[in-house]
Structure formats: C-alpha cells, structure tokens
Image (cartoon, rainbow, N blue to C red; front, side, top):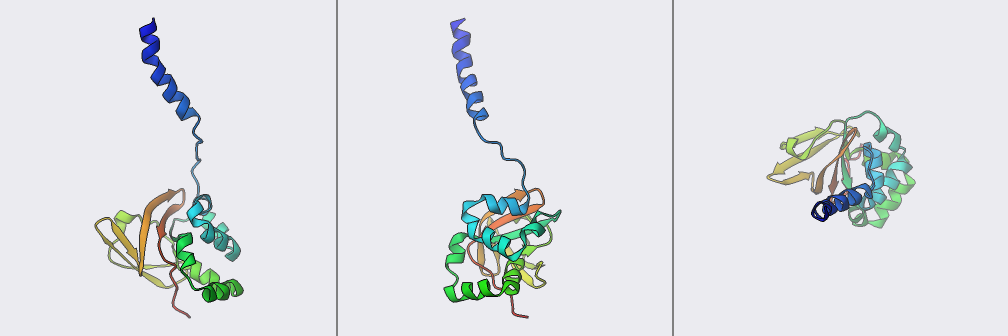
Length: 160
C-alpha cells in the first residue's frame, strides 16, 4: 500500500501543478499583442489609431510587431509627429500588417502587400526572417485570426 502511495505521489504533484497554471484562451491578433508586455507601446498605438477592432476581425492577418525597444529607437521628433497626425500613425501601423497569414516557414524572398497598400520586402535564410531592414526576433506567435512576429525595428512606409 505504501509503495503505491509513493509511486502515485509524483503524479498527484504533477496534476496539482498543472491545475494551478492559468489557462489562456485562444486570442485574436489584437488580444495577442495586448497580452505581451514587450508590445505595450504597439498596443497603445494600435488602440489610439483605431486599429484594434480591425485586428479583432476574422482576418487572417500577419502583424510584424515592433517591440517596445524598437519604438524607443525611433527619434522623439518622429514619434511626436505621429502623435499629432492620426492618419499618418494609422498608415505606419497598417504598414506592419499583411492581410494574410504568413508563418516564418512560408516566407519566401519577395514582396508582400500590406494593409496600408504598399509592399514590404520579406526574406528568409534558414531560421532568420527579415522584413525590410527589420529582423524577426520571435516568429509565429499564433492567434485565432492570424500570426504575430516580433520585429526589432519600426517600419516606415513611403509617403504618399
């Protein structure tokens, strides 16, 4: 009897540990961005630009999501200009969104059309994926309506 109890003890401990872990429900692209502390700047800008509802829609979407560090590298003057020009802010953010699901494995050298209307140059070399001059730091964060790739730079679309 003691032997059974001893062999069951690790199993009971494992079940208890798993039961105490929070279960994350599947989330859309907007919620996926909002849940990631490294994307808090992007999240606040997406909300300010009125794109959150779009990124909650059916999609599919691929978002090349600049990290907080990427936004810190943008000159303060540029960030001030974007804050004062909602249309330009929306253009910049939409330039990071591709209206299709594109995983890292599916990236082929070439251009993809963005939600903003311009094209982005994407490429893959082994495990490394680039978009324009940015490097994908973490790829394939899956959402219910697409995928998010964290990038190390903020991409600026051509002026229209």
